[in-house]
Amino acid sequence: MSEYWHDYNGAFHPVSAPDYLPVKQLQALQLQRLQAMVQQAYHNVPLVRQRMQERGVTPEDIKSLSDLSRLPFTTKTDLRDTYPKGLFATPLKDIVRLHASSGTTGKPIVVAYTQEDVQVWASVMVRTFAAHGLKRGDVIQNAYGYGLFTGGLGAHYGAEALGATVIPISGGNTDRQIMIMKDFDVTAICCTPSYFLHINERAKELGIHLTDLPIRVGVFGAEPWSEAMRQRIQADSNIKAFDIYGLSEIIGPGVASECVEQAGLHIFEDHFYPEIINPQTGEVLPDGEEGELVLTTLSKKAMPMLRYRTRDITSIIPEPCACGRTIRRVQRIKRRTDDMLIIRGINVFPSQIESALLSAEGTLPHYQIILTRDKGLDQMEVQVEVTPETFSDQIRKLEELRQKIASEVHTTLGLQVRVTLVEPHTIQRSEGKAKRVIDKRGEL
Amino acid sequence: MKIQQLSIFLENKPGHLSSICQELAKANLNILTLSLADTQQFGILRLILRDWEKAKQILQTAGFLVNVTEVVALEVEDQPGGLARVLEVLETANINIEYMYAFTFRRGDKANLVFRFSAPDAAIALLQEKGINVIGAVELF
Image (cartoon, rainbow over all chains, first blue to last red):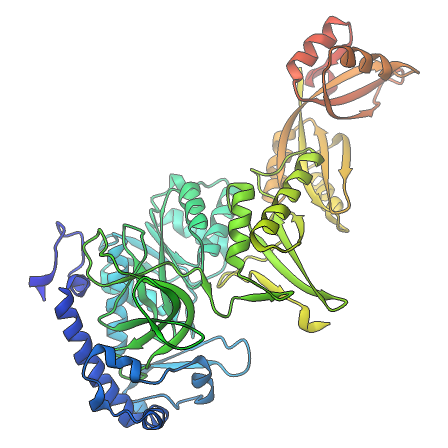
């Protein structure tokens, strides 16, 4: 495929070639892969066959990419209901790896990979790292958790295939993370953005400034984060903070990633085909409109996924990216359909609280939302950590800050909330996904 | 002539104040004086100690939020009218006091006052001109 590979003075890895396929060629490849995948799923996964038959669709009916909308959706519930192996499309002897996502309720969600799937996964992670300007010679500290979670091994295989030096440190033990980062001249770190904030904070306490270290790239994912948080991270630690996107049900990390333009995430759509739908009606929306992201795996063998409803809300960016990639981009994912909180009948997204905090303070502090119910009425408390920038030794100024936050939140949400200033480090730092909302309403 | 004071953010929760004191005790740091300002939710502990730089570093490492504020310390007669005279000087010159607290040490006939002014340099010049004893770190420790 080298003829299509735009070699920017060797800046990009050869594996990145599909990023630059001419659109027509990309679409032909997508259709060919889609048809093969639907055949595979139809003949090997009873649930898929049953659902397609209910709709009167056969694999032969898929003649163009737009026929995709005739296929049934798959939801997270389907993965739970078919636990443990109901959606596997290959015999167990062809499966070389299993992963599982932490099921917060009931059974976990298990996903499977063939040898080929693992190779595809490594290749999309190579393309991810290459899009961040990483290459052989870089030292990548992989602080995503290793184990059943897809983050650790997904990033690991990709970083190794890239030719970088990989430090498989996994999550946790922050002081050791900082020591390794410093002693091994780490140039890039993979972790959740909130864990990176924690590392940076702790480093400062230890008298180490990340700005003095060679680290220059952060590969951040596994939780939604805002542009404000990116600005804060980049200003504080002088690294380029990139957003990556992925989910176990599709493959793990490596579904989509930002490039150096930091203007939306390129979906590796030669493997994962994106659609945006209206979450209420299921209707497919045109590029540019906001809705729920639905992904179809085009090459996955062990566990093909037909129109998987991610619950992530975004839109496809129709314009081509300045970086030259032809694969389409989605907007950064700021919220999920299931992040939405209903408080006294008002729809609230944690991202709205974030923007209110940002406009009150200028930077984004650590915060947590606590929901309780008092005499049948929902109460929302926002706990905000005081930062060195906002701390004043005058009570009056702190009270002013508290009121300013409360009024910004009120303006944004139309809700009266209680704002509490708390000491630094009192809001639990996650080494995995940040827990922004504690809902105690069910306990009463 | 200004004195460095440490200000620490504290939530109103049992044990928070004592853990600060324990950190300082472990490092053998003596608190010369302190004041605690509080609201229903949170408080600000203000500390004056000789080795404030070391204390700041210890408390920050322990995870506390610490600010350094410059305050002005005065020495007045420990008798009726001592504070009133200082306040009169400040009031006449229209100098605003953000907050203040008082303590006595060593010499029984003198009291010490700690002020935070919005314009500390102007305040010091004025007080000295009026013959009020502004004390620096050297005299204090």
